[in-house]
Length: 99
Image 1 (cartoon, rainbow, N blue to C red):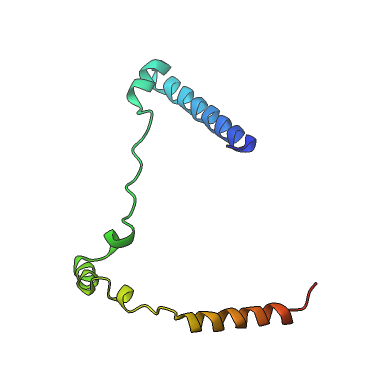
Image 2: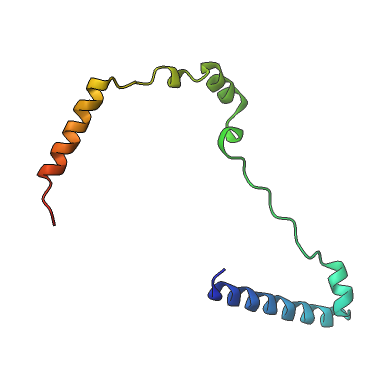
């Protein structure tokens, strides 16, 4: 954590502590009693589902039924196609103006 982040965290904790002291005084409680009442780590709100979990069951089933069909039909370069692609790349390198 950066020094600025650490300072922010310390300042935030100090502010929270001051608010707790004011609250304890207003309720006529000691800090120890108040800490017993307030959970130290409030429960975080649940995160929304991501990826496949966010899809509806029917959409998920439709995708699963395809069974990776896209991966089966991918293009595989032949050695001639690859050689031609490298030649094009090399030509672009040569004609590129140097700065």
